[in-house]
Amino acid sequence: MTLTIEQFEKIVVPLCMTAKRKRCQSYSTALQKPRLEAKPESEEFAIISLFERIFSFHLRPDSPGEAFGPMLQMEGKRSAIPADLTKEQREFLATLLPKVADEEMRARIADTLWELKHGKATFFASEAVRAYLTAAEQSEEDGWRYEADHYARTLRIYASMKRADKDGELGIVVTDKLLQAAKNSSVNGHPYLTMKLVGLLNNSGIEGAIDFVSIISEIAEKFENEGNFNAAHDAWLLLGRLYHSDDKFDKVTYTATRAADTFVKMADASEREPNPSYMQICSWLQSAVSAYRQIKGGKERADELYLRLASLQPRIHGEMQRHSVNIDITESVKEAIAHVSDRNALGAIMAAAFYRFPSSREALQKHVAEKAEAGPLAHMLAATYHDKHGRVVARKELEEPEENHLHRAAAEIRSMQPALFIRPALAQIRFEHAISFREWVDFLHSHPFVPEHSRMTYARGLYHGFHGDYVAAACILMPQVEKSLRHILKEAGEETSKLNADGLQEEKSLSQLLEMRALENILGKDLLFDLRGLLVEKVGDNFRHLMMHGLLDDDDMESSLPVYFYWLILHMIFSPLDRKGLDLGKRPPDKAA
Image (cartoon, rainbow, N blue to C red; front, side, top):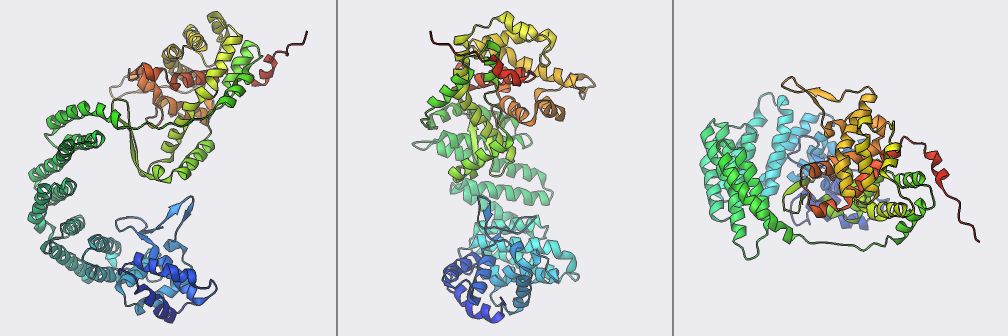
């Protein structure tokens, strides 16, 4: 369907002029209802839907990559981005641009064509720069963020096309406009906009940024006096960057100290409240400790604040709420018991060892997706993980590797397995069979996973676990697992030692062993991933580190971790055996008399 300039002027522009604000997002909103009311086959629908999408692009002014992203993105779907535009639509926009009077619209259309590198791209970049500058000057009184984003995007575009500005004329315009905007905002009492613009000037290396030192200093003091410590923190850091650009490093240290102290003041103010949140107080103190540690001469203050932090963290535990869900596991338990019943001893233990397998990557990805769908907000938010003493032991960032999500999912699945099948299955085997320590020793004779000189120790650990003492089994078997991994790697021709910085040879750590590609070939990727998550990953269970460094209490050692660890050892111990013989251990049913 052919799009025309007349359609834009007679249909799109009047509709956009009904928007509450002269902003692209407001224009897109103003076009939504008319688009829904228009017939899908009509020219009106085509022109409205095109500009509704263009005006909905999410501008990321500080992004070094793609400037526009989707406004919405969920469950594998997203809203429009510039790359969605067809060749015909791009050519129409290029033809339309000279006829567009609204500077906000001009900026968006020109910037879109610049991003797509359509035709003479630097021409569109230049047009976008000029339009953004004018639109910023025309922004509403309360639209400082919008104005700042326009100036930020202007600088980003100009930096990319600077070589095409051979006489520097456009650069002079950009510099003058930005300096004047910073001066105007400071005179008119807009501290946030002033800080943003001065930051842009300084980051772009524009001369004149240093002239705002006294203004930014006044803003920082004013914010502190008002108790607006977050804003004061940002102002002190900006002042430090200005001093750094001017090589006044002694003042950089001073401003860094003032910035760090805003975290302490936030903690102090919160602790004086009637019902203080110690989780928030400790978060601010953590930030203060980190900030002071980066300041020359700040170690003593950092250590002092850390002692205060450590003394307050135990109070966090009382603020955390417990959430529980009742799940009927009766059928799962019955099935597990039935699976191991009426077998000989070896067949029963093998049945328990292979009743489940470590979760595959595909299964974990599905689990993560289902949780994200059930609770999208919780999935997207950042979070900190605290131990029972209130200490932060892990973090969940807004954007983090998929591996972290998978390790958390695997830890959640591992925590349920002891109740679902491990405890009831092993209890049933104990009820039907008595396996002695000597039988475990004999079973491990010439076992490929167990070094010959560790056979007695392994047998002792397996014996304790079989009889339900999972804590003793974990304490005995944890070091042996590391030894076994070195053993099977060496048997495969791999070197497990390394040369340190002092020229001494030492064994690789467990974490380093679990990262070796050869181990994946031996154990399989699913088992290796489960071992890493259970034993060494901070975003997983980190069981080996916590146990071996004495960081687990009696309650922790009676949790699901030692039980699952014991089962995983059984899984590895029995893996070299012929599982086809599993059913051979099944005893014939009793005959009626």
